[in-house]
Length: 466
Image 1 (cartoon, one colour):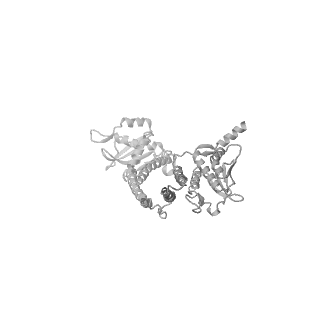
Image 2 (cartoon, rainbow, N blue to C red):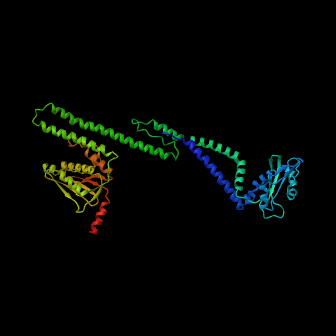
Image 3 (cartoon, one colour):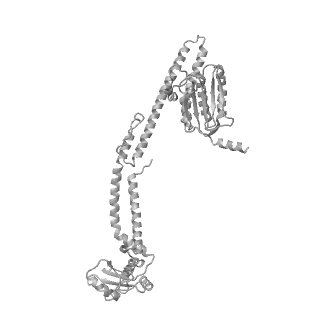
């Protein structure tokens, strides 16, 4: 799996962010100038000064007398035609003399300034008070040495934006490069230092295995941004630790439960002459089979492929399970009574799983019901199913424990202790709820609540239309 450096990613993002910020700031500054803000005040025509200076320098030439003069290029002539008021001049570096062909008006106004060798001068000629910095003079290196070049009254072209960008970048490139390098270095150090708690947490996590799931990542020395991740990992470790512990207890209890019937079966095989040998073998086989089936049911429940989207009529399902248990109830001299609405009550889930839940609860009720009594199975319109017996009941202190795997009140209690635990897992997986209450007059009432299906609404609508 290819991994990317978070530090390099942040530094790279910072670099591109600086480029974008620099560009936006540059455009914003030009916008403020064009809007007339005092400190940034400029005009579109002023932006063309850079191009005009280049045209003026390109028009410099030596005559036959080895004297410097202006020979306007076609581009400069075109600009002079577009801007009749455009003027230009050049002054020699040492002598401060004007170059032949320079504007007399600019020579008269700017020649006194040459003595102080200005580096950058914006100016407006007398009689042109409305112009905003219409003229510019600055020293430039040319093929003929260092000259002061002055331009005035040039007109804007859209290509001037490119020249302005290149010129500004020429002056600011080193500042930008140094600022970027320093920012990248600072970002590298800051991110490396800031992620140190996360690195320590990763080292702690790498030392956790199946035998040390009780360990947790240190959440005391992490930032508020990393804290939720560390808390989430610790919560996941807690759930995993609890699940592994539950599986270990389950496997140990399963081995314990299977050991007894297997031992008894071995003893019986040593005495085949006993008159009850065959019936005893069948009983032992049934007990071992029930334990194995309940273990398989619990294992299948955790499979992601199990579908829980089938529409099931809870009334019809309860009636079917009662019919299956009727013969067992008759042999035990007990009865099963169904109380249900006339209309179907639809729930969504997995039919075989719900069958095992209802069958298990009914079987437990038949075991608890006194001989000659009746177990009542009641289905309500709110998708609640109650199984009511009139036996010894379940003490309030044991009402949570009865749903633990392999829990039995005492060794004399029949069964494997797996049924209700599996039933609870199945009901929970369906988004339902199972609990136990007292039966009025004595006994236990197991209640199962399931989410109702949308099929109930469709059925009710059809009934109204009918």
